[in-house]
Length: 502
Image 1 (cartoon, one colour):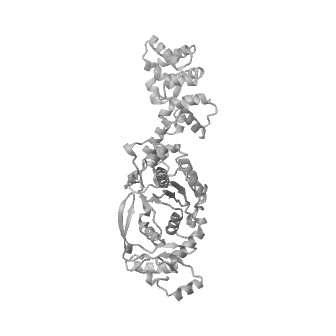
Image 2: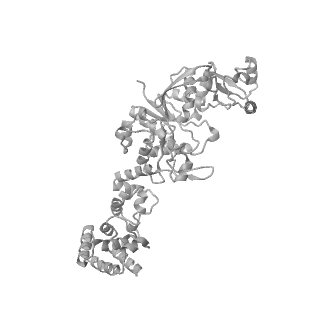
Image 3: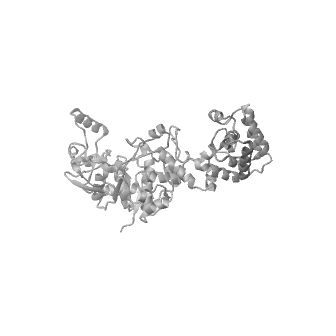
């Protein structure tokens, strides 16, 4: 059995989209499941759309996700270079080779000439296509004599190399995810393989690179399905064995119709990129999952299940478990609908799985200023608050009362918790607490004894006490809050509340 080698080959024309992350992840999972190798190759032949910093962004994003290539531009490898812009001599060699076959020809048509013939077709209500029906009337080496072609070459007339699509052939194609299909070559046009600047298009460069890098399986988005016939014929033209193909379905909008886009993220309030990305042209920053507080393992778990179901429909899996279970044959043919709520659910689950110490380190790497609180105290706060947290910052935001006294009191809670007798009751409780050892257990017992001695239900004491400490009727157990903020602060907050309600 041949060694499994897969590649993720993004173009540095912008930030890495959620769909691109999933393609890279499935490449990685398949390679590791099969004991193979995962290659990162940068396809930067589209110089017009190149975005500065995009390649570095892609590498950083994959690293944050834990999708580490075995070979890449940064890491190197035996098939280097891994940037297409650095492989020109390789492409030139294979351009010469394909032009010696009957599968390619050179075309001298100018954009103006093509626009004119396109207009001619449109005037008749037809659509122009550069194919086996039109190539013989255009300016190319199929229609022109050898002398005419040589004259144009001698005059250094710009030209492109086009694929010569065979006539009247039925191509039987196979896809690991989608099964068998057939296409008639008469429905396919003569795609450009090499542009007039000598650089290959995606179609030609990627099959050359996949062959040279011994890629065994090509996993890519379904937008490349219409190109499968051409790519299969290119392998035939070069007399190479084609890799196996697997085309992934779309990640759909939350409402289920159409491909997920950045516009959807802006509309519904979620990122579509793994990391923040600052457009170098406009300065506009697009939010990323990392900066929004998602944990990388939660993010990757969520992405993995957008189109693949592990055994027993398990939902929480580590990257290692995914590698063990991943099966390309179990990837869904239908599109996967993105859910903001589900992505948040994953993050919540992973926060619960983290130790308090791990979450402390995560919080310390945010822009929160926690310097005034000891690590020991922070770890206890995390332990009390993480159950309610979707994002690490929620631990701080939902537990602000641990760090600062309330400056206002929720109106609805106040009406429920405070009456004309409450101030006197809490004033007396504060005096009792001043002589109490301040641990959670002793505070709990002291409040219980106080309520019992006063003939009050616990709610009549605990609710206004919570309101005094927090400003709302929320948070963990009151004795736990009091132990952490300390005796002096607890009594001060009770007195502040009494003064407020006077």
